[in-house]
Length: 233
Image (cartoon, rainbow, N blue to C red; front, side, top):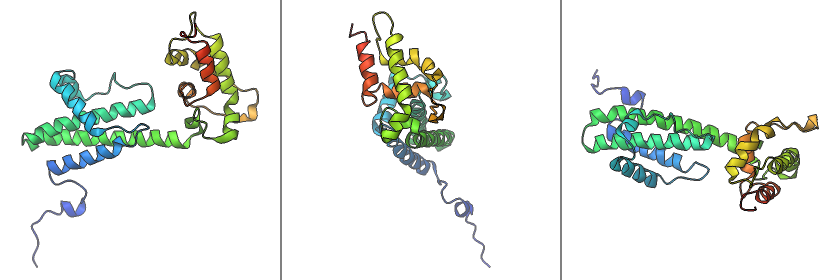
């Protein structure tokens, strides 16, 4: 009986890349797939080019690259947090590419492994964000995609937000929508409709208020903001 001396690892784990270049190409494809699944699709080539230029010009320091640490760069919004994670994945990818281009695969492998980890974290977080965005009623606030019933359900909260925009406006008026949201969302969060059977649950009042104040959000709320904004004064 002839026993092959070929390693069996590829038979057991056929999806694991055999070399650094193959892993690198796989990671590029994964980053490409991720980039188009944000609420506003990203241009991977544009991001890689901008990050590479920032590295070359010193706008991103060596310590920041080596740490690949998200501390201090994670924004409040869930989607922005995933975009920050995506950028960190791209940074690790760029550093791995430098080692591969120089022919040093031994140095590239640790970076490739870390890039795969960051990509996995980004994919998981983005999947959770998209699921929440597309399946929860809260994600539909401001876009009014839930029809008449959904609009009526959240009407008391929108009415309360209009009242808060008027009563909590600072002297001189609101300067930015962000200022308005940061000022009133906690009070909006405390508001409970008089009808206990309304069965309304808003998990993130900050995001809800932000959505309502978008141009595509709620007209009555936007009118109240404009009427009590700085430029209106």
